[in-house]
Image (cartoon, rainbow, N blue to C red; front, side, top):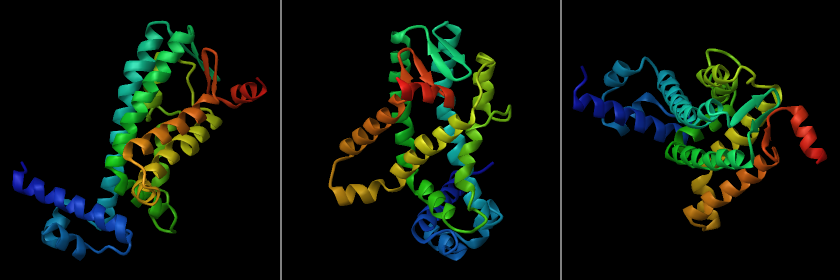
Amino acid sequence: MENTETIEAKERIINASIHLFSQKGFDAASVNEIAEQANVTKALIYYYFKSKEEILDYLVRSLLDNITSLAMDFIHTNIVQMISEGRLDILPDRLHFINEDARRHFSQNIDVYLNDMIDYALENKAVIRILILESLKSSKHHNDLFKIMRLITSSNDNIIFKTISEADKDFNYSVDMVFFQFFFISIPLFNFAAYYDDYKALSDISDEEMRSSFLRSFRLIAGSLVSGSDIFLAKSGMEVKQDL
């Protein structure tokens, strides 16, 4: 069992790695520099992690695990609960709510969920910055950013899909739904976190204004999928919305 001192040493290793990877890039940061900044020996680093690559794998896995946990909290308390109460029915191309009040209630809870995700992304903006930096290089970690897509696949290995589909068998991730969630939800959120400090410094606006602007932009994009008591999920639904 690890004592407090060794746990704190591991945390210093992780924090030093995050700082160096995000500032210098993964390839440029050395284990020697991590050890020096964390005030530990290289031997202790290798006690916890077999390699520098394993440290990055740990950071990515922790990020995705916590994002999954936040998503599952929202799914259980909103989607699954609303389905069980008969207030939400998932159709092949849309979320259909029993009435406009139910749809509005869901949308309000999405705002709460998005605020939680913003908080988490900003708390971990350095790790997200690492993922973006690595995704732009030809390296073994080039595809780490795309691991977020594991959360939007129609597979029972994906706890999010499994939970929703068990509540309503009609639920499925269409090609358009995956595309929309990746490029219009996940990537904008990651970019917001990664460039948050730089944009704030250049624009000289407050944290509250930054968050409010991002939320307004998100609502504008998400609102394009809403029609009455429905939120469209698939291509056919999007085309119908465009014709309205």
